[in-house]
Amino acid sequence: MEFSYANYDKLKFDIALEEEGDVHARLYIRIKEVRIAIHIIEQAVRNTLYARTKKEERSSLKKNSCAIGITEGWRGEIVLFSFTTDSSGNIRQS
Image (cartoon, rainbow, N blue to C red; front, side, top):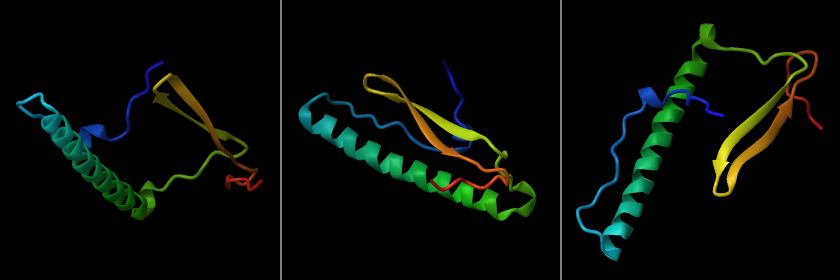
């Protein structure tokens, strides 16, 4: 199964690289990756908040439906059952 990612084409980020291959270089790559990840999250949050403030772009949830999330884990796919909606399209509290 392959799913596209929503806004990756709108996010700007660098790839963490180092010339050396020693322990220090690998550590510094991890530090760079964390900084890049924070930058990506900040961009995604800004884009999401901006989109949700536009009234014409708001969408409602389908009535009597459910949401399932799929992600990649270290042992394979992880499937999550997120929520269900009621007859009004609101998230059902259980």
